[in-house]
Length: 411
Image (tube, rainbow, N blue to C red):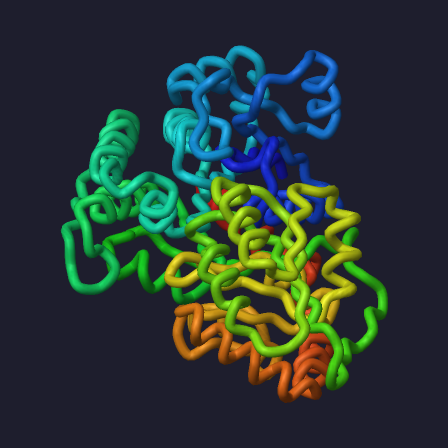
């Protein structure tokens, strides 16, 4: 099959969506499929673009100066559509358009699929309502959400309007973002989500298209061989790792605040970047926390850091729909720590600790309990190691291939 990925979150970025696309692309190509990736990105030389093209990765027209957080922003969808048809006429002969995210490049993929009668599969990765709330300053959230909603509705119709309620949509800004998300999903022929709990939320707010749960998988080429059982002895330093975006929605600052209440030896290694990077670094230095910030690093270095850890940290709350870092930890048999009960769906029971609530004091209490009961690390690690083969993308990709084949044959 010929499969085209469209994503506004891929080039020049790190994170769960990037890891997911890389793993799926490699697995599909290994099975003999032709896979293109179209994505926004920052300015590049001709030589850099040529190297990407050798891997069938292509940067669509993108804004040179304007960006969202640290994320590149595409030009208008109509410009991308014209560019695709002019520079990649072969796109008309593809079997599936596989869409990730809900901005300009992704909109262009959906619209082009509709025009060319090529089946479209939309992956709903995340809670854009919460992302907007954490990235945009308080006084501007409604305005920004309204403008994003308006821009999106220029290109894809919005017959469904979401209003404030007592469930997830507590503000006008969140209502606007849910309106965008739901109508974007309904523009595709089929919707995928990485978790059942997010599927249920999308159905609740009005997604009418079929939604299938397709969990993210771990790339086979990065899969470690025979990682050892993690052990933690009384008096040892609890080695923790953070390898998520350093930002408000990931709640780096509340976690750092919890460390001020930890009784016992610990060390936190922070990998990744984001809008709260400098703020988190200043906070840690001012309070003399045993935290080291590494920024963005190559994945080989990150893998080594995960392997050397006792505990992997993901403390977002009511935001993550999957938590790619959790299965990255599972691949190495590393126990995980989270606050959000929805994350229990992602890793096996007995492999994690969870705080009673997302507050710094509750997180500190969970860590203090672990330090006082160090044998829990080896017990959780044993569970992770016994289940880790289940997360391989090669074992999950057949579900995606069957989905693509069914859509292509019925188109």
